[in-house]
Length: 274
Image: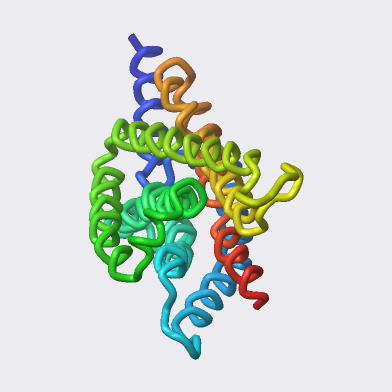
């Protein structure tokens, strides 16, 4: 009787020290790793995304159709990075449940908004290479502006899903976008192996088509590296110990998803030679 009461008292005291913003007070190494990755992401991502936004918005010419999705993607990344410092601030000092929920909402920008805009770029490159006539017909800023409300609405929907901790919609989104990007990548690669009209040598590849393939391939690699770890650990919930799952696997998978905010805008700046 005494031993059971002592055990229950120890369990209650352990659980009482846990909070939503600090679920692993006895094992902070996973969270510290995540904060380190976020610090690196802030250091590189904030200036690169800010420079991308400034370059597109302050260009001497009007915004091109191909710049609509990169601009919105850079805005999304910039907003997320700007608020990401609140997470360690709340973890160490503020310790607010409201701020924890606020951070959950903005993490939805990264987990849903980034792959959605990346997929828009992939479809754009796919149409430009595989269906050039269709691409030229709809290659306008107005066409992209019609798609933007849908992309942002889906992003906000997944932000809410993240707050209420619905994981299934993220799994479905990841799988659908992964298949979509894979089809775009394979289709562009098939076109690259076909000689263009008037070219007798298959080794001669249109530089624009080659750049499109590199862009689509890199986006797909980023998609897999960013979000596949999170998808893989979801089925392990309940099969591993709570400490292993919550204090080690979750911070590790989130570290993969956070990293890379600067890669796509950096690609744009390199194309513009900025």
